[in-house]
Image (cartoon, rainbow, N blue to C red; front, top):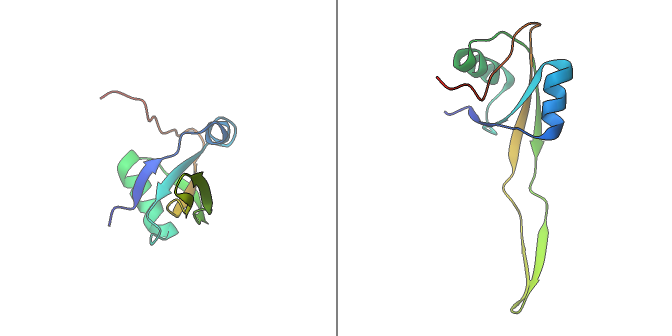
Length: 96
């Protein structure tokens, strides 16, 4: 099971990273906190202090077209906020 889908790089997350040493990832909806912690530690080689998770359902959206109203939902996803121990960072932009 691929636990980590992708890191979230938004303005709100970058503020969390600067102030509180926290990072956000989209993760597999079936993954639990223990699996997420193990995946982060294995992939980035850091020590995880805490994992907070949130499940988002896709909001109902509609748009008006010539053929009438089209409604649908974006995909639901799960987000994990990772808190690292002091002095540790994850560099997403490094070129190896």
